[in-house]
Length: 263
Ligand SMILES: [Fe+2]
Ligand SMILES: [Fe+2]
Image (cartoon, rainbow, N blue to C red):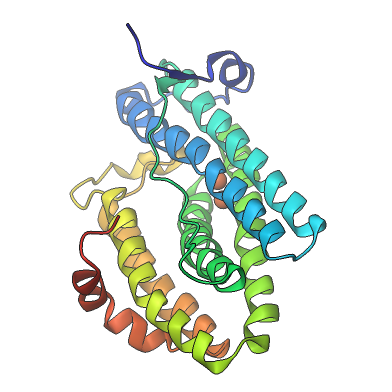
């Protein structure tokens, strides 16, 4: 018997972009965009969890609804990435992604738990998405694939900005002890983030230059951009908000070892 499937074929086929006729790269296109389809679709669960935490922390229905609209956008990104898979001759059909459960952090109070996840989701993951997708978009010639990527990019900017704004509003109101604990947590969040991102950016993958037109990027170039984003955006940005981000980044491996295997 087949397990549960994520079947985006009908919606993805209806949204297929016109791809440049570089058929020799379509196998890579299918593989790359299939991975994105699954990741994007699965990331909707993160915003469903964040919406629940916002309600739990009593921060108002409006913010929770905004988060739920982000979940919808992530599902739409899954369909758009599936549309590229279909355009390259593949199928927007995958085993239902198994995601680790959303970390509610019940061991700390609701506000602190929420801040942990806002930092890890918006200030790390979504901020990295903005940098990586933004760079890919700039290398892509005008056309329907770039339009598709622009749509995703714009949404990711919103997902990152949401967290940065909310964290910068909330963090000054918390007790210094909580800020210190959040700085400790940040070291772990950085370790988890780095492991996850590197797993999705294979170092040895180097497409030919014309791959830019299809959203195929060199793993090593993307990794370099990732580290630049940590050092020039995330660390200084979080330090400005009062977290000891430089120390957290430096001690990430140590923190991860002390905490045991990452979930
Ligand atoms: Fe997304
Ligand atoms: Fe996102």
